Structures are given as structure tokens and as C-alpha cells.
Length: 269
Image (cartoon, rainbow, N blue to C red):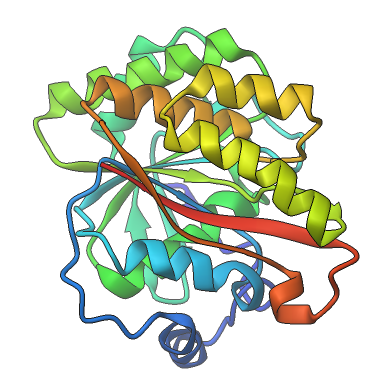
């Protein structure tokens, strides 16, 4: 059985389980609001010290089901354009997470652009960073990890439809996660302005508009295509509204507003 070892533990988040739990506890909002059901979320994937606040804001507000499909961008350039790791387990400091092989294979069978490929996942952080945060709120989970390294809109909408059809076929509750950061390394004022355009398209549940504004305004949103796929799937699964629960930049943590990265937490219902 293939075991995917942590690639960024000790770097993006603590390697030690106790320190990791302490950190998540520290960055999580102290909320008394009752969690609600969600079809999908958009969550950032930087180091927890920077983006963990936005990610925790998302996960603390929703009921997390056992099955989760997580889509992230390919930062390493390794592997197939759309890579689904269809079997094995992911190791984190908080324990092993099995892959939902049946759901992964169902998605593969419905999307002509997707390939069963583990290589794209081995050093990629965009999916890994989500998992311990999810485990903090629900220990027993199964995942389908999908890494996207193409800007092909048709391929990514086909993937979204394949995910939605597979989820409906499974008759189980499944959460979809689009892992993305927004504008990278620009001054705060221009990052916020650009990110507002991308976030507005997501809140309208409009994958075509998101794709268009990201290209037109040169928005360096690394997970635009995973978000296109997730929006496509969410609409097919009956999504009617999206809510921005937190937006921040790395400058809010570091104090450096000259070169910021934008982070948004969005819930889709």
C-alpha cells in the first residue's frame, strides 16, 4: 500500500502532534455558533502562522462529513495535468487518512482528462496543509486528493461535473475543498483590489467569470483551476449561495504590506 508521507510538516505546520494541536487551538476562532452543512469550501494553504486563521474560520463553521474531495494546484510541475491519487493513505502528525478508493475510481471513470497518478502528490503542499486542520475537527475521514496542473477550462469543468456525478452516485455526504491562495507578492492595496474581483466571481458561483477575471487582471491565484472545478461541481450538487467568512493577507501577520499574499475562506451551501 502506498503511504504518502508529510512533505511540509515542520515547515508549514508543526511536526510534533501536541505542538500542532496547540497551534490549531490557538489560531481557531473561539465561536459558539452552531456549525452548518456545506457543499464546498475554499481554503488557503500557506503556513498556518499566515493562512491558518482563514482556514480555521472555514472549518470551524461547518459540519465536516467523513468523505472529503480535496483539489489543489500543482506547484511542483510533476505528474499528470489532472492527477488523482486513487489508493493508499496519507500520513499526518495526527494520524493516517485513507483514500476513498471507490469514489476516486468513480471520478476517474467519468473524467477523460484525469489520470490515476501519485507522483504529483508526493511533494505538493496544497492538499497536505488542509488535512491536519480538518482532522482537528473530525478525526475519522477519507479523502480523494486531486492535484491540477493545467489551465484548460474545459478539462476542469469536466472534472467538476465528474465529481458531482460521482458524489450523487455514492449517496454519501461529501465535502469539496478548493485549496488556494489568492494574489502573491504584491503591495496590499493592489492585492486586495484584485482579490475582490476573484472573490466576487466565487460568491456569484460563476466559474467562467472567475477564470476570465483571473486571466484578464493577471491575478496570481494559484488554485484558480481547482476552484473552477469545485464551483462547477457545487452548482451541479445544488449550491445556491456562497459566503466569505474571512479575508486577510500575510501582511496582517508579518506587518510587511509591500509584498503580501492574499488568503480567503469561503463556504458554499
